Length: 46
Image (cartoon, rainbow, N blue to C red; front, side):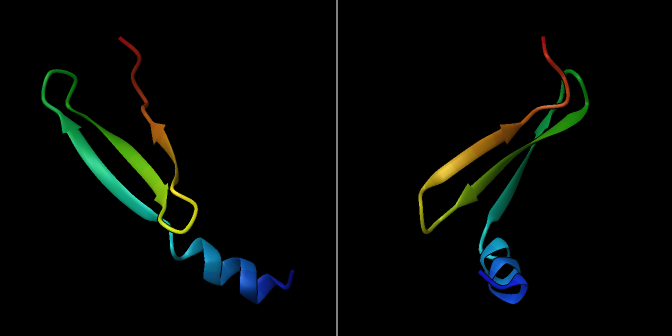
């Protein structure tokens, strides 16, 4: 796979931020619409 194709596929990811009022931090849902795979990035663990 070429670098151009990999970069193009990476641009399809959706990044959705969520603000947590209690900790005043953002968490993010990173989703790949084509595969329906996703990950949550949460900088604070309660």
